[in-house]
Image (cartoon, rainbow, N blue to C red; front, side, top):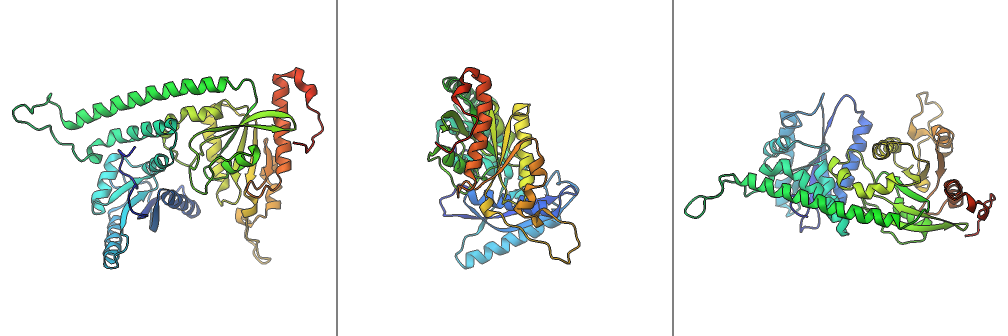
Length: 418
């Protein structure tokens, strides 16, 4: 899966610069949050961010993404930094990462304007992380398909051997350029990978059918909100969990029993702002667990300053996947890491989200939504009894509708016996 040039390197780490265009629709806080997330993505891919550049524009430039003056400033900074790094035998800046998806022309023009340094857009960075995280044949096939789909319109600038086929005696080709041959090879590879995924999809459908009619619960949420940690706590399993973005790519399903009521819990891939379309399509079979789930546990990192925007991103993605509202429990995780800044007594400005305590937040829109809201810490097992009780109640409703003759097996009174 190394056909796309990304951040993969033999060095321990790389140094990068981040670029972002701030349009009138974005606030300064949103831009800060977006760049923090992009820096976290870069760190997950093995890079250290040394500088960020933001330019205020009505919209990104269609040719070079940013204006010529700002690009000259960025180029000068990179050249000066790398000259100092060479003097100190230190690591140089080796790439520029843009917090948007670039067209092939924008990517080419940016590289030229910045002194032929490697330019990555947000989509390629996420693809690089997925390629690193993929472990099973299923995940590797999905990532490879997304990579080839990204590569197809960028063949001219991304492959170094694209010149006319050599002439001479015995060397004349079929009369087409090398790029046309390569494009046909890539298209054939995409078709082959799609067929492989169809075969994997059929296997996945069969596996889901073999699980019988058990109630299925899916953990959904923004990436790195603690879904795998919650999965381990609920099912007493050992699913891989790490404080990195997209630690989970493959869906993991475990059987959970609460008060003699069995059901299945699936840990799914996390969502993210501007998730590449190709990844959504290639991970369709993985996301089928969300589409076919009876109950969703929407895990939210309440300690994140932009958790409301993350909720909106996840809700929109689920709506696009399912097309309907599924029974959902919102699980506000990481209450142990929650912090706020109380307003001073003489501060007459309106309260912002950062000024509300956890108890005050519980009395706001969170408690008034149509869905259940629970506040826990999966890491510290805080408030787990309430979580298990709520999940048990919702799963029992679905189970008794499906198997009404089993209703007598489950008492209405909740017990702590496991």
